[in-house]
Length: 99
Image (tube, rainbow, N blue to C red):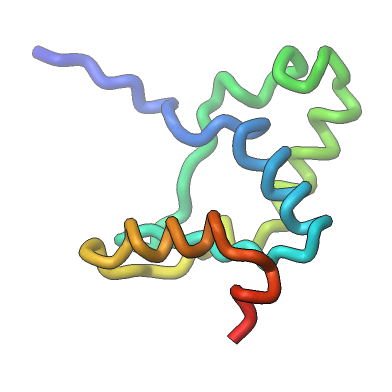
């Protein structure tokens, strides 16, 4: 029988570091997935090693993550359109994303 690692999810630093920088640059971040369910963090990514050994920096990014309401309650998108939507979001300028 196959075993599955249930602690898998996004890496804290891989999500929060670029999201924070994009927000500083004026981007509005919208989290979305086909089911609209909240993603889970990989439990092994909430360690100081991924933040240069700096415990205060880890805590700062955990608090930043906890403040991202859209991450706790992401939008739901149709599965057939998610690739185009993600590409548009990642490669558009802040001005192009304002509707």
